[in-house]
Length: 123
Ligand SMILES: [Zn+2]
Image (cartoon, rainbow, N blue to C red; front, side, top):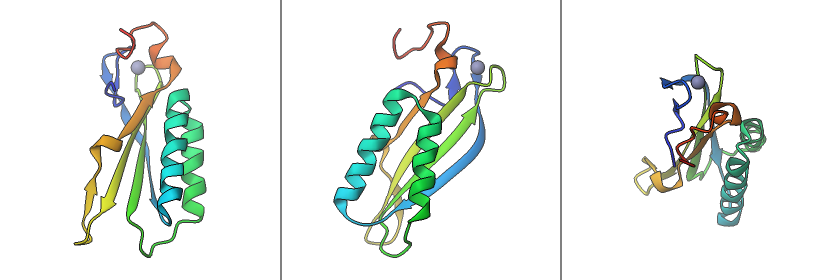
């Protein structure tokens, strides 16, 4: 994965516009299903869809016994207004400490940011 916090087209670091955080509670199956949906949305580079999913999850998040947390950083390039998404996943261990699951990090830049074909993912 390329660094989605960076706009390759403009050679600029993107700025954080809004940070979304959601607790994913419940059964393992539900967490797996959520991960699958995130993966699918990232494949489409659909920033609106991803934030929509987070908002939906937020509506029915339950605090108790939640062991998974997802954060989505919506970032914007100050030069071209391209949107970049930086997503992270955390899991709470037995000591009630949150630890990042770096293997499950996700993110992408929107199509505008690769319009000139310099997306390093395809270079
Ligand atoms: Zn840019």
